[in-house]
Length: 149
Length: 149
DNA sequence: TAGGACCTTGGAGTGCGCTCCAAGCAACCG
DNA sequence: CGGTTGCTTGGAGCGCACTCCAAGGTCCTA
Image (cartoon, rainbow over all chains, first blue to last red; front, side):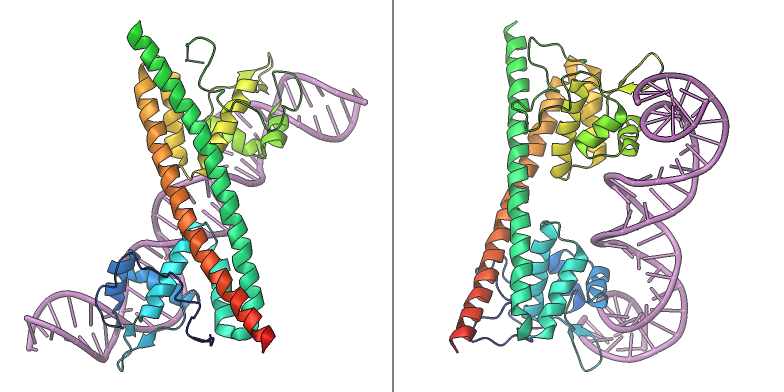
C-alpha cells in the first residue's frame, strides 16, 4: 500500500517464490504466519508494535488476517535481517513506504547504501573464507604428514 | 604455541598482511594493541579472562607484552567474529590449540564446519543482493517514468 | 459447549558481546 | 617528580533483538 505504480509494486519484489504459500488463500492467522516464517506470534505482534509491519488487516472481530503482501514484506524483512541491518533502519524504511511516493528517492538511497553494505560484507566473508581454506589446508597437510611418518 | 609442525604454524595464517605491524618490534603494550586492532583494552583483557586469548607474555613487572603471534591470533579472531561465530565457539577452538597436536582433527572439523557456514552466509547475502537490485531497479524505473511525465 | 487460538497493553526477562568501573597499587616517561 | 599507563578481581551496566507473561476477555471448531 501507499505505492501506486503500474503493475509492479515494491513490497512484492521477490519474483520467483521458493516456498509456495501455505494455501491459496490471501489471509492467514497469526499462527499460520508464524509457522510459515519461523517467527513466533510474539515477534509478529512485536513487529507490528514497533512499526516494522504495516498495519495488518483484522477480521470483523479483531483478529489479525495477514495477506500475501504481508508475507512478502516479512520475507523481505527476513532478507534485511540477514544483512545485519538494525531493526530501527528497517522501521525507517517501513515508514517511508507508508509516507507515499514522495519518499521514492530516500528509499532508493537507503537500499543502495544497504547494497553497498552487503557487498562489503560479502567481500569480508570471502577474505575469511580464504583464511579458513589456508588453515584447513594446513591441518590436512599436517595430518597427511603424520600418517606418512 | 602448543603447535609443533615444521616452519608453518597455525596461528600465523593470514599470509600477506594488509597493515604492517605498528613497529618492527615483537612486543606491544595493551594500548598499542588496542590502537592497532580497534578493540579496547577492556576487551583485550576480557578475551584473556574468558580464554579466547592464549596467555599473553608479561614483562618482568607483570605488564602484558603482546607478541606478533598474538596479533595474528587477534586478526584471526576478528575474521571469525565477522562470520558471526559465537565467542564460545572461538574459545573452544582456542582450547583445542592449547591442548596440543592430538586435537588436530577436531580443529580441522571445526574450521570446516565454519567454512560451510560462511559459504551459506555468502549465498544468503547474494540472494539478498539480488532482491536489493530488483528493488533498486524498481525505484530507478519509477523515477525515470515520473521524470518523463 | 468445551477447549484452544486469538485479542489487548505494558512491562519484565534473556542471552550475547561487550564495556566500564572501583580501588589500590606498580611502572614508565619526560 | 608527576602524570599517564598499566596491573588485579569481581561485578555491574548496556544495547540489541527478541521472548514471554499477565490478565481478562472474545472467537472458532469439533
